[in-house]
Image 1 (spheres, one colour):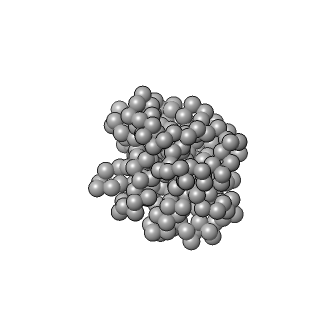
Image 2 (cartoon, helix red, strand yellow; image 1 turned 90 degrees about the vertical axis):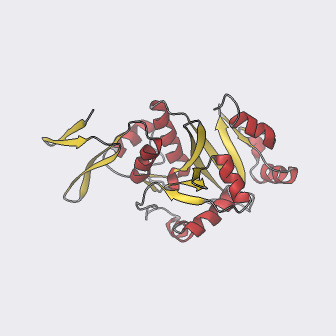
Image 3 (cartoon, helix red, strand yellow; image 1 turned 135 degrees about the vertical axis):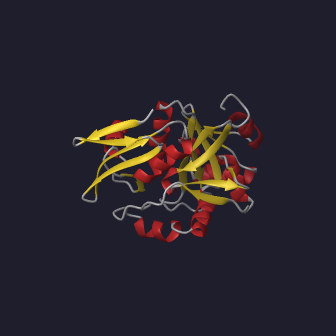
Amino acid sequence: MNRAYIYSGRAYKFDKEGLYRILIDGMIREQRIVFKGNVTVLLSSIAWIHTHGNRDDSLPYFKLKEKAKRSKLFLTCGYISKFTHEILNELGVKSRIVNGCTLHNLTGYDDGHTMIEVFVDGKWILYDIDNNCYFEENKTPLSFIEFWIALRNDENFSIRYLAKDIRVDTEFPYFYYAEIKLTTERGLKNWYKRVVEIPCIYYNGIYYYTTMNEKEKEKYERLHNVKYLCTKYLDYKTFINTFYNSSCQ
């Protein structure tokens, strides 16, 4: 069924999936997302209305939804991932928050990264809304664990972009750093290698993590003080069985 949206006495036809913007004098007056089942189109629409920054990190979910009807959202990775996760939950689409952590010396900024994994057509697919992208290998979208393995093995995966908007708020304190590090595919891949050295999946209030060996496990636990966090270690086989071959699907 075609959708009609009334604004200032005019009817606008929103008959296809995606993001619609009503512009008057070059300014966004209203924007709406139409969702009919295509998850990638939905996430692309969210990526278009989001720009990396921290101006809106303190806003609750309902205020973010209201602001998103009329303007950009400026959120860091954890907050845009949580916002997207809550939207997907409302629409009945299964998703979960995932997090990568570094084993390098901590800097206070690029020590980790939060993304979202969405269950689409029987498979978990990783989306990085903060960086407007998802990942493919041999034209197949990657899950979080597949992405982690591809990074470890220097595999030649592709970055597929969801949107081509302005990716970093110029008022964000780390704007120049992000502009240098994250605006090229090569720079982005190198950054992922740093911030996704340890995979963590958030489930029922706990971050579950795994490593390939005991040395990495000890370093991660020491570096990130995991005894003070809601975390639980799973060996690699148990991690895969729990999150990719079980009822978590």
